[in-house]
Amino acid sequence: MPRFAANITFLFRELPFLDRIEAAADFGFSGVEALFPYDDAASQINRRLTRAAIPMVLINCPPPNWAGGERGFAAVPGLSERFRHDFKRSVRFAEALGVARLHVMAGNVNGLVARQTFMENLRWAADEAPDMQLTIEPINGHDMPGYYLNDFDQAAEILDEVNAKNLGLQFDMYHAQMITGDGMSVWETHGNRAVHVQIGGVPGRHEPMGGDIDYPAFFAALDSGAYKGWVSAEYNPEGDTRKGLGWMDMVKGS
Ligand SMILES: O=C(O)[C@@H](O)C(=O)CO
Ligand SMILES: [Mg+2]
Image 1: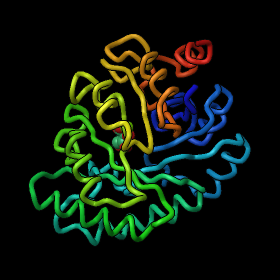
Image 2: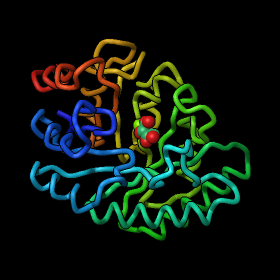
Image 3: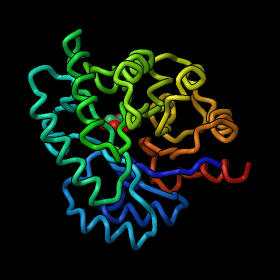
Image 4: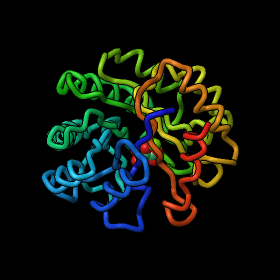
């Protein structure tokens, strides 16, 4: 069975942010992740992680200003200084939480200069934090219009060209399905680059069951394949998070 983490930016939103950590542990998740947990002190988050006896496995860079609509700066020409400042801050926060993975967000931009900027900043980041597993994630244009990294082949080319041992693919099955209509094929082509996996149903980004993605087949592929990392539940529960966790019981029972 895959090792499941709960993305507590999406799941357990019925509860205050810090309480979601214990809820995730109580409901069978072995870890948590969060998009931007920077509003709480690392010491407070750590206390809750210790009490729940589970790790935080991934956070996103950049820290704050998300509410202002920015989607990162790693690929935005002219903002490398801003990106590097934010990156160092994210690494410090991740280290304080014992988080081993950092998702580096590209930003809303396009064109050849953006590609060059993205690769330069990724190379710099990989050198700057050699012990941190960095990830890049293709995100579908419906959910995040204008986001630079919106295609898995594009991500694979960038990973090959940057060629840093601590940089890999964040494979979100929800985005793979939304972008191509056939997420399983994308996994077959690019799954070997994955260092982090996320799941959510299509349509609607709800619970990973039913819908257009054959999740039982995907979980079976994960069980029999080389990927042994985290599989994070990153979806908008249809109702109360706890009532929608039947998909986990199905995986455990199979
Ligand atoms: O898929 C997503 O939306 C996330 O993994 C993410 O990092 C974008 O904020
Ligand atoms: Mg994702």
